[in-house]
Image 1: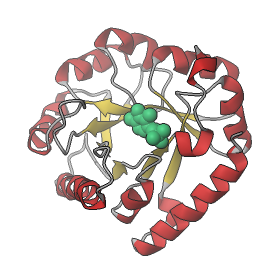
Image 2: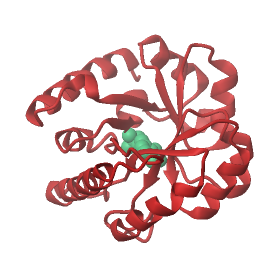
Image 3: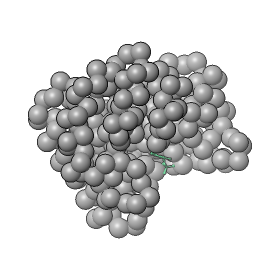
Image 4: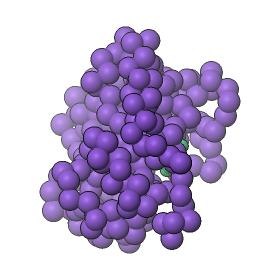
Length: 230
Ligand SMILES: *Cc1c(COP(=O)(O)O)cnc(C)c1O
């Protein structure tokens, strides 16, 4: 049995402790409940428990949750977004965490009816299996985004490698933070880049110590019931 309320309390305690260790204010950290693996019912539980930010990674899952949940939710699209799916998704979400190519920016420009808050996805560890730009490419990409009036880059997003090695994970987060600070100092009107979307169930405490402002937490909060969703 997954007790969402209990999980949330325990996660909040850990967020507070990690914020202290990182000399941060825990109110600067937003918990996104990643509900991609769970049913509408389980998603409603997490909303009941007080979470107002939900994350999905497939258009179908997003639609299903959007249709069922009326509370004022901020919707986050956290997965790779195929260009042809932009039209059906972009105006339903408040934040896109996976901006990783100009063709996607182009399509957002065409389809979005208002300015969209986006994170540029960075593949800090340059893993084959993951999407996102390298740290080097992310900087020039940022400049190229200037011509898209419907895109506001509010920050950077990454996924750390799936490893037990805390040093590797911490280095990834630290490198992302460095790049975020470098970009935000440039005060680009289209890219304030003040936010850091980093940290999942296994590594959100490290991410917060290293500066995360959005953590994306799935299994540790809502469990997994993949088979019920399909
Ligand atoms: C699934 C997913 C998460 C949540 O992962 P958990 O390990 O279940 O917390 C976070 N970010 C992205 C991009 C994901 O795809």
